[in-house]
Image 1 (cartoon, rainbow, N blue to C red):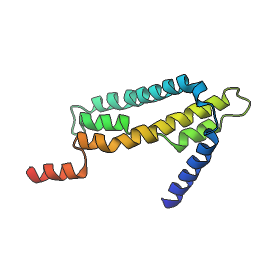
Image 2: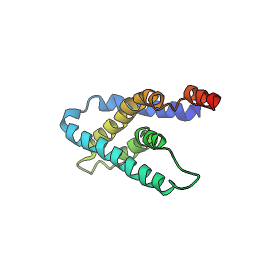
Image 3: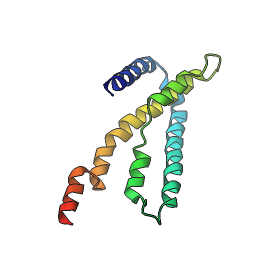
Image 4: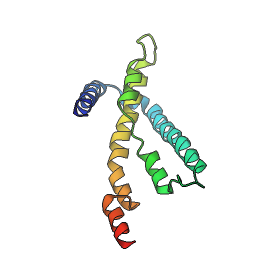
Length: 135
């Protein structure tokens, strides 16, 4: 696990140092669309699947569904796929920049807001322990 974490960290550092020199302002519209489509795609996968189990013992509370949508962090796989686009594809540069932007958004915006959201929805260990004691 540590080796995978280290490799993942090195990958992000290398790509980040490369992408820091890219003109992200030129693809900011595409980046916003990419972020939006990523969130919509995640919601389109989570909410209908959760609805299928609404009447069963496998029912998933709504707050858990929201956590799955917002907390669906993206990372090295998406970047690896973007970097695998051949140099012969004219849009290879913007594809890598937008992919990096979506991954950075998911790590920083989504990742850093998860702890406050979990506390707000009372899904932290401390809140769950308190509810079990009260029951």
